[in-house]
Picture 1 (spheres, rainbow, N blue to C red):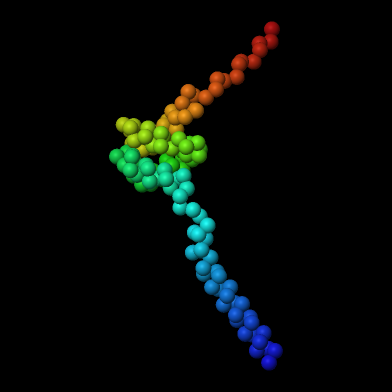
Picture 2 (picture 1 turned 120 degrees about the vertical axis):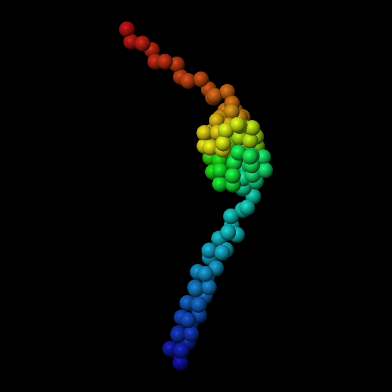
Length: 118
């Protein structure tokens, strides 16, 4: 009798573990929000820069300018990419990211040269 209870318990645990293992990949998406800055960037790029960029290029470019998205400069970068006469490449994304926000002036000046030893 005790053997039957132990066997039934083991089968129940194995079944519950199997169900949990099958449900885990599906349920992981629940914790990942769908309104991230990159998602908004992809949508905006698809609308504003569809002449220069396809979907894969928009996705890559939005990953490339993640720091500008956090600074809320994504729309300005996308507008720059959309107005560029060149195709949607990493170089275009980088140039446009360097031309917006606090980075537009090239950043702070470099350090002074070291003193000369006479």
